[in-house]
Image 1: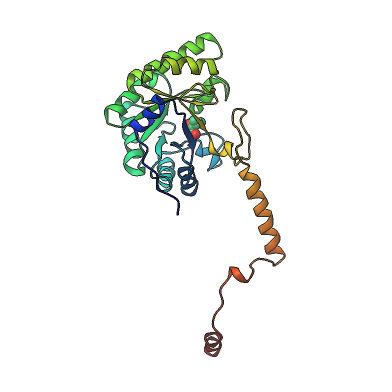
Image 2: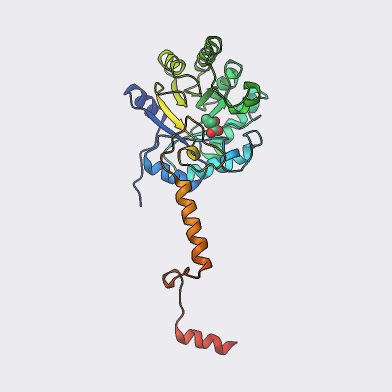
Length: 284
Ligand code: KIV
C-alpha cells in the first residue's frame, strides 16, 4: 500500500508560491488515475469539462452537464483524498446568473468533495467569482483560450498575441483577482504576457497551460501528457510517457492469447477437489 500524503490546503499552495516552488497540476477524470496522481505527488487536480472529449467522446465541452462533472469529480476525490481538487464548472452552469453559479459551485463542494471550482471568462464573470467566494468557496478564473467560448474566439488558437488583446487579458486578470479569485489559469497566451500577469499578481496564483514557464505552476491535460487521446495532440503538450502505446500492445497480446488459447493459463483459474467434482457429477 502506498503512503498517505499530507492534505494540500490553500495556505499550502500559497506557501509553495512564496518559496518559489512550482505547483504541479494535471487534469484527471477517474478513480484509478487519481490514485496514481496522488501517489506521484501531484499538488492539484482539475476535473476538467474536457472530460466531454477525453472520456465521453464528444467533439467539444459544451454537452457536458453538472451531473457528469459531479460523478467524475466524486470518483477522483475517492482516488486522491489529499490533492487540492478543482471542479470545472461546465457550460451554462454559471453563465446565466450569480445565483446559478453559487448553487452549482456548492454542488461541487457538497456532492463531490472538491476544494474549489474554476470557471471561464474575464471581467464579465467577476460577479460570479465574487458571489462564489462570498459563499465561502475558493474560486479560480480561466483566461486566454477558454474552450467554452471557442466559437466566439475563432477556434482553438493562441490568445493575446496582439497588444490590444493582451491588454484586455491583463485587465481581465486584474478584475478576477479583485473579485477574490485565489488562482487564475492562463491557457495558450504568449509567455511574455503570462510573465507580466504573474509579476503583477498580488496574492493570486497564476498557472500556465501552454503559456510558458513564468507562472507559479503548470497544468497539462492528462490525456495529452500520456498519449491517451486518439484525435490530436496539441503542440504545447509534451508526451511524458506513451501509455496509449503500452495499452495498445497489451490489447494486441490479449487478443492473440485468447485467440490462440494460451490464455487463461493454469495460474489464472481455480480448480475443485476430485471428491466434490465426483459428488457434483452424481447430482446431475
Ligand atoms: O476542461 C479542462 O480540462 C480545462 C483545461 C483546458 C484547462 O478547462
